[in-house]
Length: 312
Image (cartoon, helix red, strand yellow):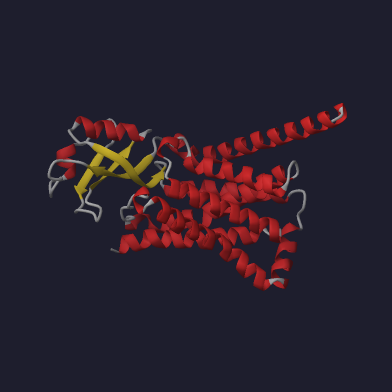
């Protein structure tokens, strides 16, 4: 290999590395904007559910009386629920704190042995979840402008393609959900259902906010970011396959966050396969709109699971 070839390959790799770095920075920036209200308005207001391991179970005792109220950390605990199907007891604790460790430390100090954090039902700033939705709408507008600023006719061409390819469009929007559910079913069968914890019911007061977050804003923000802006950035410096794989790694990493030691293999498999399916839709159809609709349909199913638990 000649020296010019080596330099050309080195420049291409450096360009790809820079694109990946910019992609990661963009994801972190979007995440920071979404949680910005929590820092502007005060501490984060979280509602979580712990599993309890007490001799004999908590019975019907008042959780607030037993586990106390810490005014400094804003922790309150409600009544423990009945015995779940997996034999564990649950208690719901609401607190205003910067970190989940504040709540767990307080509960342990009151004699409670806390297991894993099974579900963060909602995490919102002190001003309410609607402030988060306003931030998400702002992000959608910004990402949409960034994605289309060099080619304002993209959306019009996508709509024309969809109108002329209705059958392929239906398959495209169904593919992400089918692939994700198949990945969940197969990985659960191979690894065992015990790898995925049972989710406690979603509280009714959060239904509308959760619907807007899960079904509307999350698909819009994520598709504009991952299959839109970042895919355009990566595919110009590599192949479609490489761009999709790198984008999927970033996508899964952002969802896993810093709790990499608690990785649920079923969830990671579902996220990875769903992301690859969405990239395939983008590559095969060229339509970001179909990716958004497909992601929304998938999340409608996810939300329906939460909603069904709330109806029990």
